[in-house]
Length: 239
Image 1 (cartoon, rainbow, N blue to C red):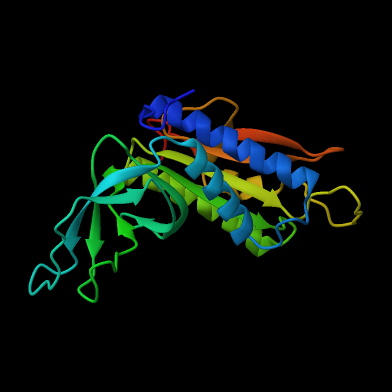
Image 2 (image 1 turned 180 degrees about the vertical axis):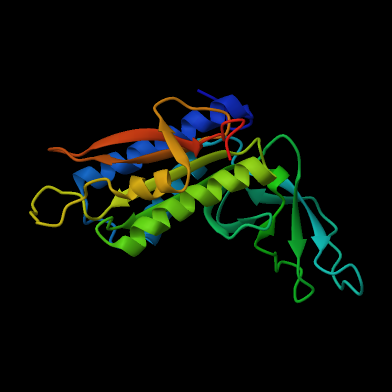
């Protein structure tokens, strides 16, 4: 087992995240009504990652939000948790969970309104992993689009801003049959059609630019499964 001071290399960090996601899905199958709102499984995964990833904290440096008339001076060495909620990676929208790199100090930006008032936006080069979690019914068309939106956002982030990034999508599908409940409106996996229409393709093995997507396969009980989604490459000569 890794010591609390040992830095896990990138090749070892991704499997730890996958293991935590798998545990999250198994817990949902056992007790689907334990966490009622989407923020709860986000917090649960955040807690597991904080417990299992090493190191737990990383060095940080502060830069001013505005270079002119910045009123703050940070005198001491700064530390921040490696796993954070609700941050913006580069120019992207808010990401549910991020994992900072541990091989160098990360750069945080501070507003001039207070010495601890840190901006949500962080540098893509400082982030090692990005995770989006949805707990919503796939029967709802709007929610189906939001699943595809999250995967597309992660894919664009990895291909355009941070090619080193490990990207994960987790779906707790509220339209999935669960123990102790029956329904005529059950998930059929059709949310994947939206991804296919947007030029994505699915594989059962990872590739350099893929998003690792986890959900539950319908069954008694439902079974966790993982797929890898990436954009189809255009065929040379077409168009």
